[in-house]
Structure formats: C-alpha cells, structure tokens
Image (cartoon, rainbow, N blue to C red; front, side, top):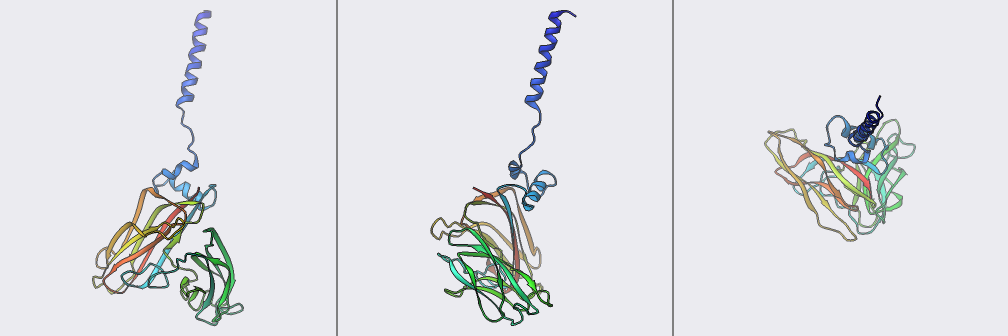
Amino acid sequence: MDDDLLLVMIVAGIFILVLANMFSVQPVAQTDILNVSVGESGTGADFYLSVAEGKVDGYSSINKFGHNPLADSGDDVWGGGGEYNFYPISAEAMEIVSTSATDTVGGIGARTVLVYGLNESWDEVSEIVNMNGLTPVTLNHTYKRMYRGVVLTVGNNVTNIGDITVDSQVDGDTAIFIGANDGQTQHAIYTVPRGYNAYFIKGYVGLADDDKNGELAEFQWQARPNNGVTGAWAVKGEMGLNNLGSSHWQYEYGVPAGAIPEKTDIRIKVILATSHMGVVGGFDIVLVET
C-alpha cells in the first residue's frame, strides 16, 4: 500500500473517532432529572423513587395529607378542625395528652408517639414520647413548628383510642392532632426547614360530604416566607369544587414549582364553603439542600 494513502486513512480514522466522541450520548446526572416531567414512566419516576429511598444525596421528599371533617370558610385542611394557629415567633414548650385514659404506657391504646417539627433555629427535630392518658406529658424539645405525629407502639386496641393532641404550654394552641383510631396526623400543613429549598410537585383536594345537595367549596394552596419575621400569606394555586359535579381535583406541575425558600409555611386553605362539610387535601414536595 502506498505510504501516502496509508497516512490519509490513519488521519481519517482519528477524525472519525473524535467526532464520535464529541456527539456520543452522555449519561444524565441524577440531579439533572428534577427537570423531567413528573408522572411519566421512565427517568423522572425513577428519580423520585430514588429520592424517596434516600439514594440521592441532598434530596428528600415530603408527602402531606389532611382531612377536616367539618370545614367552614376560612378553615384549614387538618384533623383538628377550624383554623390552624400554631405559628409562634419563638419556639415554645409543648405537652401531649389524650382524651382517653387507655392511651398510656401499659394501656390498651397508644403507648408511645413519635412527633416531628422545627426548633428555634428552624432545624428538624423529632422525639418519642411516652403517653400518660389524660395527664399531659411535657416534650423534651421546644418547637417553632410541628408538622407530623405518628402513634408508634400500642396495646391490644392496635391504635389510639382517644384524640391525641400536642398543645403549646404558652397559649394552648394545638400543633398536632391525631384523631381517635387514626394513628397519625392528617395535616395538609408544612414548613420548609433551614438549609433547604422546596419544590412543589403535585397536590389534590376533595369533598368528603355525602349529602349531595350542591354544596360548593373553594381551596387555595398558600405559602408564607419567614425570613427572620412573619411574612404574608400568598396564594400559589386555587380551585373550586361542588359535590354534584366534580368533587375532587388533582393538580400537577410539568416543571416543579419553586424554589420555595427555607422557613416558608405551606398550607391548603378552605377560602369558601357554602355549608359545613368534610374536606380532604394533600401535596408532594421535594426538598433540596442549599
């Protein structure tokens, strides 16, 4: 073979390899998959599953769901009914109590309860509390926000018998409500902890009213930033339902809504109800370390 022809072939081969490398498909980093449309099968769904399993550094997920059995205009979607008011400026001492004497260590109802919240620095804290029936038990931590309680161990009744509340020792406001036989809070309420941004993924609301007399309800999901002071609530989404037609609605973002900054309160609010009625709601968010 002619030496000049051999040289040309070698150069051409090198050029082809360079082009192939330049235009080859590179694997997508997991942290980039947050931009994939949620709800599709495939890469996006796989990413959120990995987040839920704790396999993606710096990412975590929160699912919140709530039920207000007898809501009116201005109420929040949470198990305690009425408007949720536990938003203190400073962390407060808290106590837990039941409406049943059987929710106690050694009793047939709830024996221990795991509670979650944020401390004075807006950092996440949790603790396990031994129940003492009708007698309030003081929690070890003080709390600026509380967002979940779960019955952890039980007696023969297999869940809590009475309503369990965690109340402020300062003004009596209820931060946690676990309805009888529920075993867990139902609060569509959450606050983003310090050091994280939140991204709103999906939410839903519905009417849990069975008389079908044409009652109407309007909902908003609202957010309030708290950068050192108490901020203003602002609507981030709104929807209306009636129990003769569409009595539930789900909303989903093609691109996650956010970033919602640290220390932001999030809630689902009933802004209008034409009658007392049961309502439900919930949302999914992803937390990303900043």
